[in-house]
Amino acid sequence: MDPHKKGSAEAEFFTKYGEASRYQIHEVIGKGSYGVVGSAIDTHTGEKVAIKKINDVFEHVSDATRILREIKLLRLLRHPDIVEIKHIMLPPSRREFKDIYVVFELMESDLHQVIKANDDLTPEHHQFFLYQLLRGLKYIHTIYPCN
Image (cartoon, rainbow, N blue to C red; front, side, top):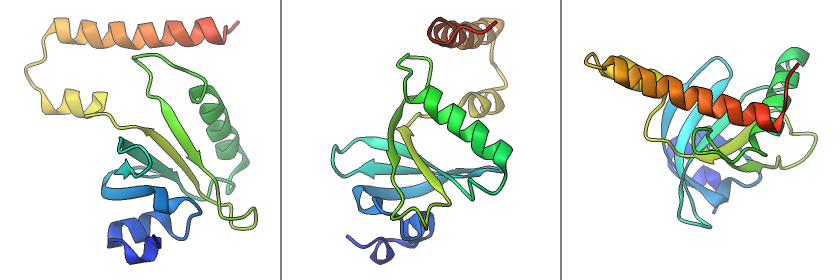
């Protein structure tokens, strides 16, 4: 399926990307300084996913290095408190490689949304969030010990 014949959100999101036909974009769920995140369905598996489009990844060497480090780390991690990379989409060609599309498991919300949406969070909630963060961090340190 040609991405330009899909809905406008999909055509805008993928902009002629090689494996765009694998995913059916539902909506844009977040925007930030590095790009945009959309919710989608993986048409190969039927699974709901989030696709993070990182724009102009090679514009700044420091950003490219940080993004590469993050992707290399996350693609190897399997832990309930760490979002899982499902797929990294390949560009149509090396010459056209300027954006990166990383496919993640789709989460219901992020910690920021939970905290902002709930004025009645108890200290026990905060303690549980901290527990999950520290548990994920401990796992990362067992895989990649730091000095």
